[in-house]
Length: 168
Image (cartoon, rainbow, N blue to C red; front, side):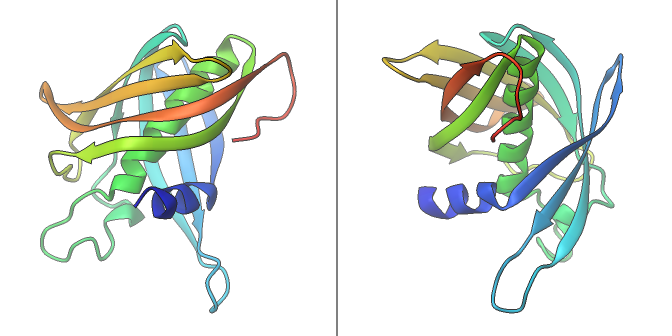
């Protein structure tokens, strides 16, 4: 499953649209490069109240009921796909590191566990802790719904200091 998730994460571009004091409005655009060509969709989701440092951050996030994430996943019982949850965690990591002048190159994900379904308009609380490794870093995360873990796991990455184009 890790290879499939990693491939899906590479297919998503994050486009910050508007920065507000209360948070960041994100529009995610997914591209499916299968044999039939590219398919573009708009996935409105909101990451807000990003707080703390890159070493220990928190944020709240929600995905509205009319988001394209729920289309066909599943009819009559919409559940937020796991890749959407991972996209929010990744965006929180990248944004937090950029605020401190570091660029992030995500090199892997692992130990992902989806424990609770996320429904339309559920408010998720993200808790992320950065740990130094030998020549990389790990971001251990927990996404909670009403205090209970909905998703847990870890991203691994390399950091680069200074300005430049974000690579992940």
